Image 1 (tube, rainbow, N blue to C red):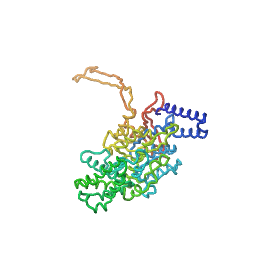
Image 2 (image 1 turned 135 degrees about the vertical axis):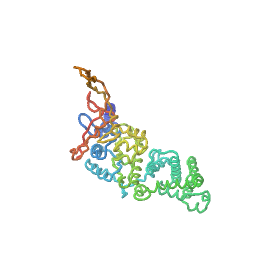
Image 3 (image 1 turned 120 degrees about the horizontal axis):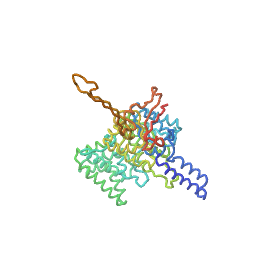
Image 4 (image 1 turned 60 degrees about the horizontal axis):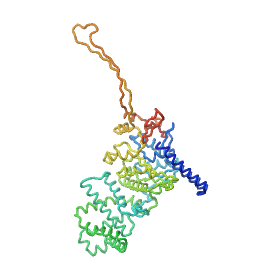
Length: 520
């Protein structure tokens, strides 16, 4: 697999250090045993699933990401996806499961029960038993980067993208309105932070709906006395009066926006910006998401680091845009939480791996995925995306480079039965080899004459050999893979490519392997 000898040498050095510390009395025998157990538990060379003949799927492979392709009904979920899920659950991974289909929660409950992980399940649904105020979560985190308005605004930007369906941004007028909304969000969030209040969407909405709409209104004593926006500005000014000069400068920038820039906007421009924010906030401050995302927090992404499996049971199939927004909000927060993780400084143990799992992943991919996947490995983040074909991602990301960047960083790929351009791309990915091709030709020519003569005409024949490049797996082969079900004895076939690793040994080694998964 990927650099196994290098990894094993590192582990051996850590074990030697543990033994030396135990021998010198720096750690007790009990501490030594615990350190060895921890080192072995999430070792990168842990076998997640064995495939026989020395092949298998290791934790180090899970860390480089997985993408599973297959047409509808090809068995990608009940075959390779189930196969990997059982391995991840049995190995003690935590994770986040995004739901596109209505039956996914039940599916994961069954998988968790069969691997002894039922107690680790957290079902986030419309009943709001589990709640996550993601804006306050970002605003109140104690780390050095916590509480920065720009990071909180980024969360809102991601949700705005989900609503607009514009994953790659835009140009011209579209770019202007995106920037205008971002500018508004920045000043809304900054005002709440400067006033020392708790960031929430209802609070941001209250500020906007009571903001001055004209320069004259700014001077109106009634507005100054009763407007929530005006009261927030007063609270921010008092909080910054004797504080950090830099914070005071931030307040002055924010004050100028609400008392000068916003009231002086063209009425049509201001109305569009305000409407856009309302469209952003409305799904999150009305049912069913109001309680899920704006109440107190009793579950957050970091709980997955302790082994919790968080299922966002607000499926797109049932809740449509509301479900997509809920899943994307959780996804983005989970990704940035994972990226904040660092490996233990003593290098004697490993972070618990956590997975981001999305079936019908085209519902959830965004422009941030490539950035996340490029560095998730070092933070023990394991991505598993299932989709029908590359075109599904292209339709959402609207950019071939973005699709190639994402798929290039999902190293392990499982190809189930499929058709279309994805098969050609898969064949090219698996590579080519030189084959000796033999061709035979036989020919005869004759003259058209009135009186045929004996043995008239010419005869020719020949054999030629040439070396030609041919795909290891022709595109048509993917169309015939077993799809599971009774007609295939519940067997699902997938051709597996694992980041350039070779399957088999010696001259028989190949960059892929055909694996059969049992649906039962």
